Length: 154
Length: 313
Image (cartoon, rainbow over the protein chains, first blue to last red):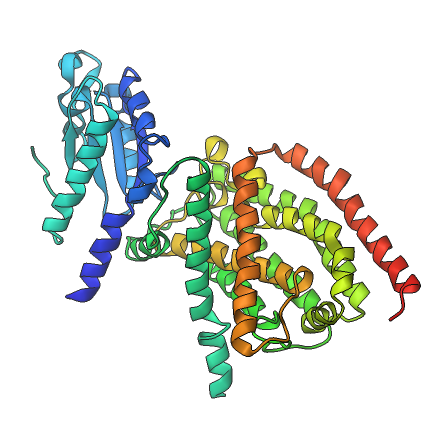
C-alpha cells in the first residue's frame, strides 16, 4: 500500500472540489466564499472547482449557524457526498453559532450536526482567510494520509 | 492479433486517447483561464481529477436503475474510443478503413449522447431527467447540420471513406477552400456535441445543478468526464481529417505532428468560442441551428454538387 495510496493522496490534495451550502448565514460569508472563487484569487490554480451537486464534491463549505429548519437538510446533503469528504465551517457563526448561539431556532454550530474538519473564524471570514483555511486542511491531510477526517476537533 | 491489440490498447486506441484527452482538457481549461485573466490549473490537473474520482466511494441512488446507471458511462467511453480507429491520424489510411466509415464514425459519435440521456433518465432525479431530455433535444438541432457538412465534403471527394476524403483533399489543396462554410458550421455543431459553453444547456449548473450527471459520482463520473475528453479529441480529429487534410504525404512522424497541430487548432478554437459566448436558451439554440446552420449546410451541399459538375476531375 505504499505508492498507490501516495498517488491517491496526492490526487486528493490537488483536486478538492467544493460545494457551497448556506446553513442559515446572513449572506456575508457567502459573498466572501464567492469572492474567493473569482478570477481575482483564482482558486482553480490549486484545482479547486465549485460544484453544484453534493455527489461531485469533496469539501462542503458551510456558512452560518445551523437553524433548526435546515438541520435535517444539512445532514442529508452531507450523507449524499461520497467518502472521503471534508467539512469546512466558514465564519464565526458556523464555527460556534456566534451571536445566534442559544436562540430558540438555532441548533448551534456546524459541529453540532456533522463532523467538521476545519474552522475558519471571522465575521465575515475574508477570502484570504478562507483560502488559508482550506490550504491548512489540505496540509493536515498530507501529514496524516490515513486518517479520514483530520482535525475533527479544534 | 498482436497488432490489433496494439491498435486497440496503445496507439490510436485507449492509451493514446487517454493521454491526448487529458492534454486536450488541460489546454482547454488553461486557455479558458488565461483568457479570463487567471493563471489556470497546472498541467497535471486533469490527471489528478481522474485519479481522485476513481478512488472515491461510489454511491448509486436507491431509485436509479442499477445496471443502466453503471453501464452508460462505459458505453459512452467505449463508443467514442472506437471511432478513432476509423479516422486517419498517422498516414493516409486509418487503422480500419472501408468505404462508408464516415457514417460509422458519425453514428459512433452519436452514441455517447444517447448514453448520457439514458444514464440521466435512469438516475430518477428530477434535475438529471431535465438534463437528459435537454441533451436529446439539443441532439436534434446540431446533428443535421453536422452530418450535412461532413457528407457535403465527402460528396465533393466522391468517396465515403474518411481516409479517401483526407487523401483527396491532400492531393487537391485547392478544393479545401470550397469547404470553408462547412468547416465553420461543423465547428459550431461540435460545440453542441461536446456540450461546451454556448450550448452547454444540458448541464447548465446555474439552472439544473449538473444536468444528466447530477447523481453520478466516483468512478462513473470519472468515466463520463473521460468520455467527454475522448469525444473532444475524436470530434476534433474528425474535423481535422475532413476539413484540414494537410501534410499527409510527409514521413510518418511528420504526419503525426501535423495531425496533433490540426487537432490542437480546433481545440483552441473551441476554447475561444467557449470564452466568448454565454449560454443560450434551448429554444434559442434550436432556432439558431435550424434557421442559420442547417440552411448554410444545405448551401454547402448545393455548392459542392455544382462544383462536382462544373470543375474538372
